[in-house]
Picture 1 (cartoon, rainbow, N blue to C red):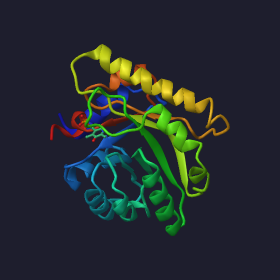
Picture 2: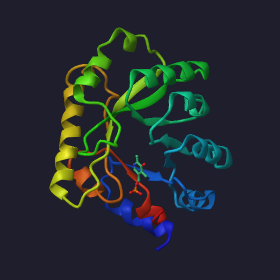
Picture 3: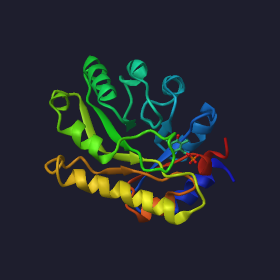
Picture 4: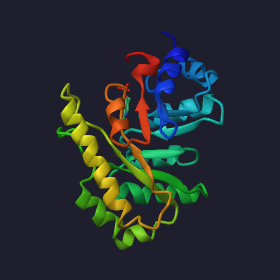
Amino acid sequence: MTITQNLQDIKSELPEEVLLVAVSKTKPVEAIQEAYAAGQRVFGENKVQELETKYNELPKDIEWHMIGHLQTNKVKYIAPFVHLIHAVDSMKLLKMINKEALKSNRTINCLLQFHIADESTKFGLSIEEAQELLTSEAYEQLQNINIVGVMGMATFTDDQQQVRNEFTNLKRYFTELKTSVFANKADFKEISMGMSGDYPIAIEEGSTMIRVGSNIFGSR
Ligand SMILES: *Cc1c(COP(=O)(O)O)cnc(C)c1O
């Protein structure tokens, strides 16, 4: 199967309102060019250096999503061009994104990452931490960030019911915020959940954005 065929297969099954983020991490520029030629414009990377290199080498109408854990000292490298940062899980990081966005004269779209998996290694906030962050005075000062939704990663397991429950939880957190702190914010609407192994379940549970790598580009 080619990248082009893989993309066609995935897109043919995708509801229109679900965005496909093609996760190109570790893959060469040529692989991204093939996907680009097939019409794909949204790509996700999880390392700052790699994201920056690929941004410089590839067409400028690509929307680059930073999907991995982001260190505050590296925000400056992607702030001038990044379209969406998926994994924001602290006030410290949010403040740095705001600062660098201001320097670039931009507003940067962000998703709040929630800890939904049954694994201690995955990053993310609890709903209580998110509410505290979003109702703080420090948050109100941030004029150059725009929180447009939530993101989460399910446990890596064969137990489909567990994965489904974790996605249900993320949807519930989204709804809680949507009906409270973000009640008047129409652009808080994204739920980034679902990867190669679990995106069909994620879509059933309300995903608006799936992050798919190996099913498009092959295993890493
Ligand atoms: C690598 C990665 C993906 C894509 O994983 P696949 O299993 O290859 O589809 C999605 N989200 C994040 C945060 C990742 O790091």
